[in-house]
Image (cartoon, rainbow over all chains, first blue to last red; front, side, top):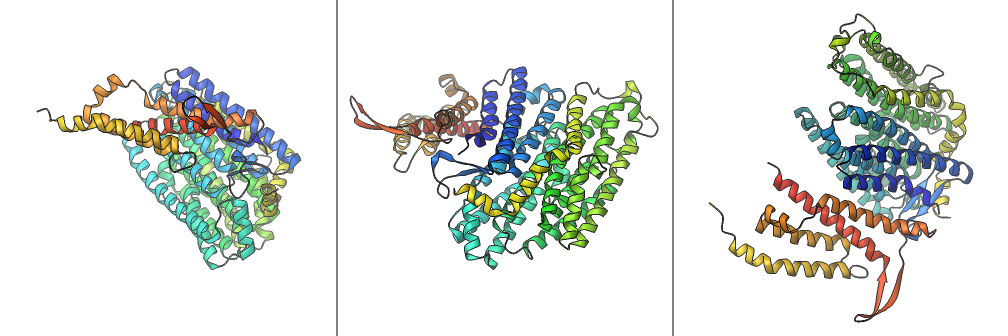
Amino acid sequence: MNNLLIAPVVIPLLTGMALIILQKNIRLQRALSLIALCVTAIIAVMLINRISHGGIQTLQLGGWEAPFGISFVGDMFSALLLLATSIVAIGCVIFAFSSTERRQEKLYFYPLFLFLITGVNGSFLTGDLFNLYVFFEVFLVASYVMITLGGTQKQLRESLKYIFTNIISSAFFLMGVAYLYSITGTLNLAHLSMRIAEVGQDGLITTVALLFLIVFALKAGLLLFFWLPGSYSVPPTAVSAIFAALLTKVGIYAIFRMFTLIFYHEPQVTHLVIGILAAATMILGGLGAIGFWDLRNILTYNVIISVGFIMLGFVSMTTNGMMGSIYYLLHDMIIKALVFLIGGTIIHLTGTSRLKEIGGLIRLQPWLGWMFLIAALSMVGIPPLSGFLGKVFITRGAFESGYFWLGAIGLVASLCILYSMIKLFMNAFWGDTMLNEEELKGNAKGLLFPIAFLTCASLVLGIGAEGIAGYVTQAANELLNPNLYIQAVFK
Amino acid sequence: MKPNNVILQTVTQVAVFIIFTFSIYLFMNGHHNPGGGFIGGLSTAAAIVLLYLSFGIEKVRENIRIDYKKLAAVGVFIAVGTGLAGVIFGQPFLTQIFGHVQLPIFGDTELASALVFDTGVALAVIGTAVNIILSICEDR
């Protein structure tokens, strides 16, 4: 029993509730939400420390033992994601301080932000399938509201698509839960894993597994990403950054959890399908990133490429591939928030997102430009930046397990990232200066600090990769050995 | 022309009390039988919405001065707070306790900390449900 596990859920939730009551006082709202996120980050560090010494931590809510009550399970994978979530959230909330309008801040921006974090943290920690559904809904409902903050026509149009897509996928999620419950008679993830291992994963269960794959692929933007470019480019910058950094990653987390813990018996079916989806995602995302000349579109298509790339390491089901996926997942959360914040700042400064109308920004905003270059290079995977290790391990894993075609597509996708990011850099920051100091639509005051914070986080992740290697290895081993998870829940 | 609401208003004046009583019954029934904070809160919200329907938003707002958003927040606070009480005593989150007490009129009564939790749930449900209805009908 470890009550620390509930803290990442309860702290943002209670703070959010307090902020609803303190709606009038914006300063206090900002301070409290920042403090809550910092405390969550500290708790994530404590959890990582505890798990590295004592193995997977569990908490049975209300003292009801495992298959009957709701379990909270913290393994190294979820704890690392918790820490990355907190860091990203701190960066985005600081960015929101100076970029969000007063009126929107009063319309419960900070409580909603914290509810989103509550849902994301809860999804990472819960050990119960239905509870996972509930936490998905918690962050989705918060995201429905946040996507419409501002209420422009474009936002309302995209939010409608976003809400419909997610409602349909949630309905499928619920159906999958019902199927699984009627087949196995349990919803506790560890218990599910045990029962399916006992009776064997027959065709019916594999079909249910594919249903879950559709659900989580919709949420993660794995091939079924038609809703993603539109809905991630309309909300305010701080919101779209947190969406790009966290929401697809929860879908990825769910695929990892379900297909390493429960549906891991028929990899020649399920994992091959995931591999094909990942390949198609990378190709289509790469085409999008190359083809568009709009800053927002390029960035959202880069989100899609990275989803495919992370799944590529997962498909290999080797320690190297898993380690690579975990490294890349952590890197991608931070870096996607970072590039979205930079992109939002560029749009804020110039008033346009069309690349051909921007140019020479580096003379006006040197810091912004160089930080963008660092972000771009680490997305591509230039050593010693943070994307490098992930790419190496993912590629190695894919080749080790014989998925040569997948590995090759992954490398080509990296080239697409390189081309699109350098295109962005050359057009936006180099070239002739199209605007002078007076023509800028806004100033970057207060916006550079959170960007610098996330750049530092990304640099630390890249240069200190050796330092977290032990944790990542442990996370990969725990994912590949479902028995560790089961034993921790049923001890 | 002002619509004539005499029948609705007269019925409501009686019906609201019946609904309130029934919702309290549902709420108290919850620990061992069907009922509880959620359904109790929902039926209370139904009564409040009925009041709004028959007497109009302005008039009810004059008499029930509650901010339902804050009510919902307070409810969640109470519910999660009882969960955290277990943590203070070194038990898992959401641990519940109960005991038997001799009360003057009711005699031997079972008191459970789940009741406090349920109160929180009920407040959260009332706050959310009424707030949803109000924000839909105020929207123009």
